[in-house]
Amino acid sequence: LEIYLNGLTGALPPYSVDPAKLQETARSLLEEGPYWYVAGSAGSGETDAANRAAFLRRAIVPRMLRETTERDLSTELFGRTYPAPLALAPIGVQSIVHPHGELATARAAASLGLPTILSTASSHTLEEVAEAGGPRWYQLYWPHDDEVTLSLLERARKSGYDTLVVTLDTFTLAWRPNDLDRSYLPFLRGTGLAIPLSDPVFRSRLERPVEEDLDAAIMAWAPMFNGRAHTWDQLPLLRDNWDGPIVLKGIQHPDDARRAADAGMDGVVVSNHGGRQVDGALGSLDALPGVVAAVGDRLTVLFDSGIRTGADVVKALALGARAVLLGRPYVWGLACGGEDGVRHVVRALLADLDLTLGLAGFRTPAELDPSILEER
Ligand code: FNR
Figure 1 (cartoon, rainbow, N blue to C red):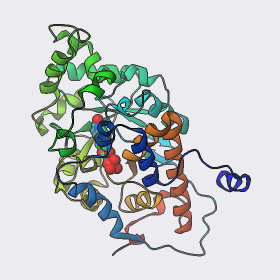
Figure 2: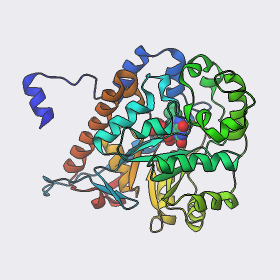
Figure 3: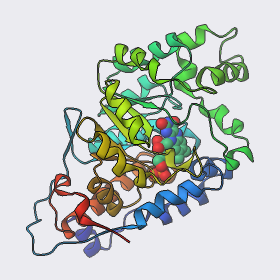
Figure 4: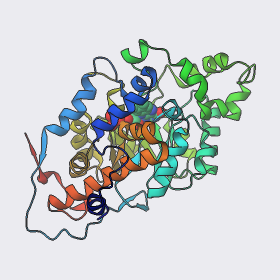
């Protein structure tokens, strides 16, 4: 209705509703470094492209003459009902594109009742971001220092983050030509990396305060968070110290999904980090059916990497994802208009999803299954 009324009065949305155009606008506003930090991916960009190709290879077959007037996107995740099957993916150092960074993102998500997933590499502290209210999940980059890990978990719990998302695919940064050809330090200096650098246990490890020697702090931070993987036998540390749901992000192989279930995890995010880690890895949507077949009855399967349109969400849900994470598109909204820009992008995607679902002949996400898709 809002769309039709705006059309009648000639009122246009402040930014394009076309994700590609919004990215262009963001590009015109950002310096090269921040733009490529978001737009870039690993290696030759093969997996980033494979993410989109996997959507394009599957087509929705719409059904007609069905009652779809009253649609309901609400979705239960881990015992809590959200208005739509959508969360905002964890994206690090967001103040590189807008000074309000994660605060703006969290406020936009809160105003829509959707979960924001706060990155460990956030430019605002998790306590500051919690003030936005609204549902919030905490994404852990798992430190190689158990006391720092426990400190982050305790801070997140105290600040009302109810779901823990542990990202496994980025124990070290991949070969990213766009990053290697540029330096981000000038941008990062201004933004902080507040969560890890503000952590009291992390700070107690430093010889000099962060404020006096940021370079040394970053040098101490890097080996703690970067360089080597954790292993399956270390998961009990997290399970024993987090009461709420735990979701492993970056799962692509059905066997890994089974191990996650065996380890007492509650969910997985089928994701390849937006093609930013293993270049040459399969498109994320191509990994989804195998994971759903392996653990769909035991775990909540979430999905990201390549979601751009309502049709994309329909396809991921049809293949068995309970909900999807939106990544780069909301960051372009953030760059264009802070909190309003993020809200604009998310509302546009939800409107697109709602219309596509109804026009395809369905009322709720639960009605979708693989039979509504055809492989091209
Ligand atoms: C990310 N992603 C990410 N994931 C995570 O767990 N912690 C993080 O700090 C970040 N940071 C980050 C920064 C930027 C600039 C991007 C683009 C991505 C990955 C993110 O959560 C998600 O998996 C991808 O963004 C999904 O791919 P698309 O849909 O954005 O292409």
